[in-house]
Length: 133
Image (cartoon, rainbow, N blue to C red; front, side):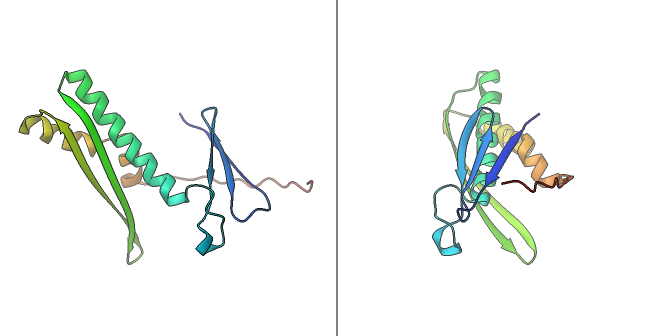
């Protein structure tokens, strides 16, 4: 369904990422020993959730022919005890009625990335030894 490749060398902690034939950079801020050259891992996570939220709502409203002219998704990640908490604030622009807004509020809770984060995911890790440079 999706594939990404992350690669880090000797530069603290700049990581080149390739996904879908495109490139981006992840890094940590200077305060944590990075260069601030790219998005932090949590910024990438929130970006995925925000993009999936906006895209899904736009697709749904377009399919229904609803007058949704803009979607703004603000996301914030914090920790509470040992659990992550993501706050998502959505602003819908357009002449939507209360029923349409209520339906979009239901739809956003079932976007693919929302469901993955809420349900969790199994992660299988394999290490491959590379003694070369």
